[in-house]
Length: 82
Image 1: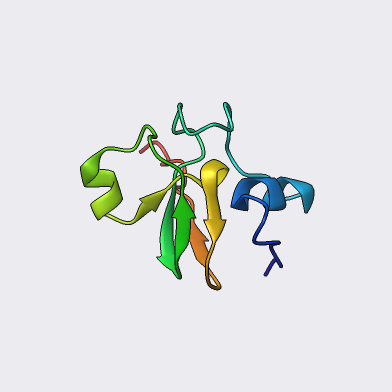
Image 2: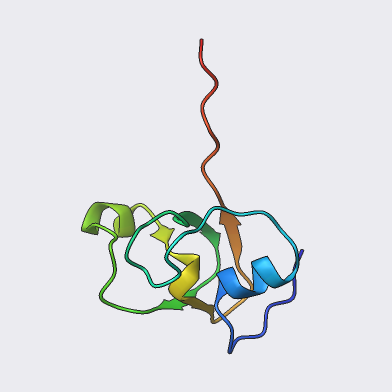
């Protein structure tokens, strides 16, 4: 659990808390920080690099997303080779 200031992006708050999450550009252009919004609502800046399908599947970019409610994010995990 992490308390996030609604004036800070989810990524800013996560990094400041010392949690290790993927990111690169911090401006919504690369998609490196893409996460699934498992619960809650965010305000996400537009335009950004997410496709319509990714948005419909519940993906967000924490680097440009601000929490509107309590949120839960799920990050993809690296697949293990067979």
